[in-house]
Amino acid sequence: MLIDCHTHVLGMGLGEEFQKTFNRQALMCVYRAKGLLPSHRLPTEEDWKNCNVSFEQTDPEKLLKAYETFDKVVILGWSPHYFEDIGLGGTVDTTGVTGVIGPPHPEKCNDYIAALVKKCPDKLIGFASVNPNYKGPKTAVKELERAIYDLKLQGLKLYPTYQHWSPDDRDKAFPIFEKAQELGIPVLVHMSGSTLTSAPMKYSKPMLLDDVGNEFRKLRLIIAHMGIPWVDEAKYMLTKHANFYGDLSYFIGSIDRETLYRFLLSCKPFFVPLEKLFFGSDYPAYDTMALVKMLKTVNEEAERLGKPKIPEEEIQGILGDNFAKFMGII
Image (cartoon, rainbow, N blue to C red; front, top):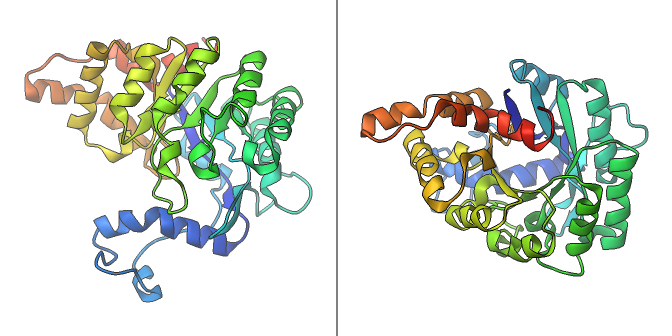
């Protein structure tokens, strides 16, 4: 099977000003690296005209067209969080494409994702999202129950870095992990640095999940982005905890093919079977098909370097079969 376990859809905050500020904070480093923005000073409005920053929400129909050759695609909700410097963020439907009634608001993030899944149930898998910092952990737990029982979403995405809480916080985070374990759903946790200025990196370190793995030994947990830049730390979490897995989103888009090959080759000596890895793109941030091609052709690096090949069945596993087994699809 071919499955992308990490994509985003719709808008990510209320108002064009939020979208603009969020994108500029997140992408300034990208455009500086490409030489499109100055590195010796903050960019001016004139400088930003050189950059293609989109303030529009990600069209679900565009996503489906981009994924015509895929068997399944996971679309992720982003629960509300108020950023002091840019405003209220979270998944919003600003154009009414989901059919969810009422003014757009991130509190409806799970309703938006569920509505899209209903439009294309054979292709889309919806993951809910909750934030214990928004209205407290009790409210977050109730919303998670609603998202699973009533909206029929199949997993949970958490964003500690963006929402300013630590995964090892027993008062805020553990009630959510406990409920997810009780519900028998997988939890995908954002575990990587963020180029957003107001997203503290201290909440992104994979080691913060160690207590979670010890406390909730039946919880199926996916470390998103392979913990970049703490990739070895993330690998060791997969080594230590039998119920931990990793997705390649963002990480695979930030490296070249040789680095990908060397990463895959390094997993087994770390006692991480490649069956624990899932393909993810972080769409629309990256060209999904280019990432698929890089993974499919990774053994060209083995030939060039004169090193062992990655077995083709293990590559196919990463591209979809591993996640399909993880979710009980096959």
